[in-house]
Amino acid sequence: MAAGVLPTLGDARSSATPRAHAGALRAEQAALARREHRALLGLYAAETRLARARGSAKALDAQAAAVAREREVVRRHAAAVRRSLAAARRRLARELRSLYEQGQPDPVAILLGATSIDEAVAGIDSLKRMANADRRLVADLRRKEARLRALEALLGVRDRELAAVRRSAGDAAAWLGSVARDRVRALAGLRARGDLTRREIAELDAAARRAERRSATLTRSRTRTASVTTTAARPVAASVAGPAGKGKRTLVVDAVAYHLTGRTASGLPVGVGVVAVDPTVIPLGTRMFVPGYGRAVAADVGTAIKGNIIDLWMPTRANARAWGRRTVTITIYG
Image (cartoon, rainbow, N blue to C red):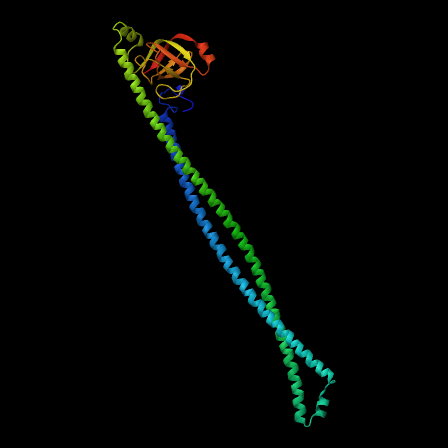
């Protein structure tokens, strides 16, 4: 609309008119609707992937918690085994210290100190059993400690692996959340743009209807004015204007140049190619060719425009002064 009517397109109802502009906006609205549909599908996909990523992260958190509990159990068990091993070592040390304090016992001393052979044999067996029991206990505790250390190391590796996977899952969930937020914002922008386009279409349709009503009113007014002119003037106008109706014809007119801003009587903005006419001679909406000016369309009227006179809009005052007032033979295209 800002560019006004574009006569080079050769039609008063070109893309610069409200209805053509509204049609272009409707096409844009349809494209926006398709983009909105694609954005909505993308948002659904991103939210589904985000839900899966969050579910995986939650499952990994549960696994990490289970591994942490298992490590705590192993740690406590290992601590208990270490305490038992330390206690066994202390007891063995006390027994050895007691034997050393009492001297170096041997089977002969036990035999000599015994009151009977059975008592001596029982003493030797007791010493062997105590020594073997202590060795077995210490060896068993050492094996348990080694197994617990290996298990704790394995759990540590699993814990580190789970931590890495959890970080990766957290990063993926954060990225997918950012993607989902971006798509929500894009979808909101498309919807807002679609709403704006719908409002512009409604305004352009209303402007087009107003322009059509104004043009029809002006045409009827000019027709009634022409009907009360003298009978002597009407044959002159008819003979100069040529036959009415459709078809290519020529007409000799006085072309006056002007430079003003604003809107035409039909509601369209002024611009290059917009011509003011007497609608009783040249109906509004008529396409024409003006020598030295180019293609134009009858889209405006004026109180001083009576008969075979047209006003040509110029982009600058200098152009208007250079043109001035000329008598030209224009070509009218129906």
